[in-house]
Image (spheres, rainbow, N blue to C red):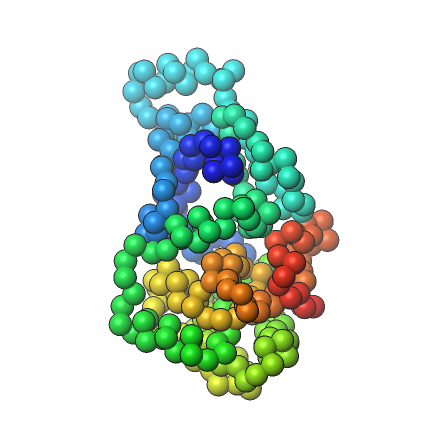
Length: 273
């Protein structure tokens, strides 16, 4: 959106400074990872963020400016997850955008720029280079089995084991040849013990907890079966090539009010979950 409107994008990273988040009985803390990539980014200052969050650096001048600017406060735009709003693509002015924006409808015309910038600055280590080469030599299918904070989550728990198995079956039908499955998970022990597809499988645990390295390696798989996870979505999207097959769930969230149909590109293959 910043590229389209030829404007400056500044990131509010204050979320990552907050305490651990507890959701549906699962506690986690997210780290800010974009600085690892070749992304041209600028972080918003505390004073800039204060215009929205009432967090002001403790100096007299900053407090004075804060008291004088309420009528100048920029517009806050929160993404409506239930529908794609094309007006957001052309939003202009001093704006604060809040959302996932996990739909290429927001940025499809800049796909080449985004894929170039979302390359890690550091080189792959030897082990990951060997795995990447192996993925390129076979009909590799990436599966990222999402559990942890999705288990017993009434909104997000929509992809069960049958979905992943049916997704692999669909992928093999579309590819037309034997497949080799590369499995990532945020619950490695459970996945190795319980998820055993009828294919040659590799459980990819060696990068943990360097998830940015996992994401990069996932993009080297030729094909993907993704759950309702933005992490998996980006792995498939960033790793796109002409013959790619991506299988995705029909339902992204367990809610009739939040359809989220615009998340899955038309060229991907949706199956029931």
